[in-house]
Structures are given as structure tokens and as C-alpha cells.
Length: 108
Length: 130
Figure 1: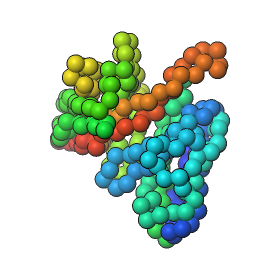
Figure 2: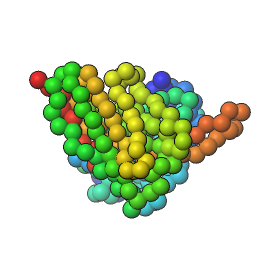
Figure 3: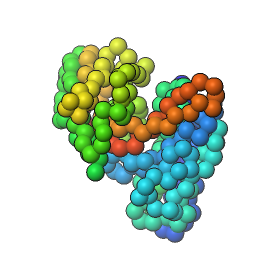
Figure 4: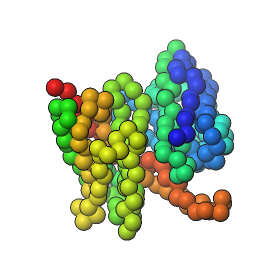
């Protein structure tokens, strides 16, 4: 199975900060990479798919980049609603779906 | 509006069985793949099982549940099921139903459909304990 590794595990940031979370795949997944946001007690929701395509309704301060084995999720200006845990997930159908371990964005 | 509503999970003894259901609405259920993803308390997300849409109804299972879990769907009821047997303490988790969204790709010479979890239910807690 493809292993997904996120870094950092926790980010302490302030409102207005630029935040970048990285995700590394143990082998190439092309651009078949999605990012999810999860708030406490709630289901995850997709933010970005195909590495950089913004899901409908997701604010434009979120962006995704990368291909192959290296990916990033960037929040250009952190808002109070963005404090949550973020997961990357590959969906290359040649291998079972796997998620990164998650990155918690917390208030500094 | 897409809605996915899981049935109540509950408390099950080790070795016991439980069937979860997920009722879908707001989209053409029969043509979409469906999955179950779980999250152990305080832990990350783990894909459990999936079933394709259309006529093939191909199923896939994570190695951690293979042989103990069966996924099925009833398109006449817009419902997907997860039958869990021989439950273990480590199966304790919130179980989410998710609808898949896919894109075909033949760039490698072999055609695949790559699907991500586009819509999620609210989740249902399954606790396995004596």
C-alpha cells in the first residue's frame, strides 16, 4: 500500500497567517490526491481534489499544489473558521486508498 | 442537496455482528460508488470498504477487515450496507458512509477510474466492548 506522510503534525498559527501543510506519498500517485478538512465532532469534507482543483464552495484562500510524491495545501490567510485537522489522501486506483495521519491547525 | 444518513451503530460484544446502513438522497445513487471510512477515537481516517456503482458492483475491502466485513447496496432503496462480523475491540470507531466521485484515466495504456470521497455522512459510532 502507498503510505502518506504529512508534516507537520501540528501547526500553531494566528489569524491572517499563511499556512502550508505538506504531504508525501511513498510512491507516485500522479495528481490523484485530495485534501479534507475535519472539525471536532464533524465529518470530513473535501477541500481539494486532483491535487489542485478547488471543490465547489470552498474559499479561494485554500489552494493545492504538487504531483507525483510531493504535495502541499496552502491557506493564504488563516481565518477563525479554518482551525481544524487536515488530511491528505491518495486515490490512485492501483492501490488501496490511504490517508495521511492528519495535521492539526491550532490557534497560536 | 446530497444527504447520507447512517443508521445507529451502538455497543457490540467482541465476536459479535452488526449491520450498518446508509440512506442516500439528492443524487443518482445507482451510478456512484459508495464507501465506508472509519475513525477510531482520537485517531485518523481509515478506508474500510467500497462498492462500485452501475452493474458490476465490484467490492473492495481493507486488509484489516477482509473476511469479516461485507459491503452491499440496494439501489431500489438508495441504501448501502456494511455487514460486520467477528468484531474486535480495534473495530471501535466512528463509521462514515461516503459517496465517491471519479475520473477516468487511460494515460498509462490501461484505463482506471480514480475516485475520491466527495460526500460524507455524519457518522455513526460503533463500540466493541464486553
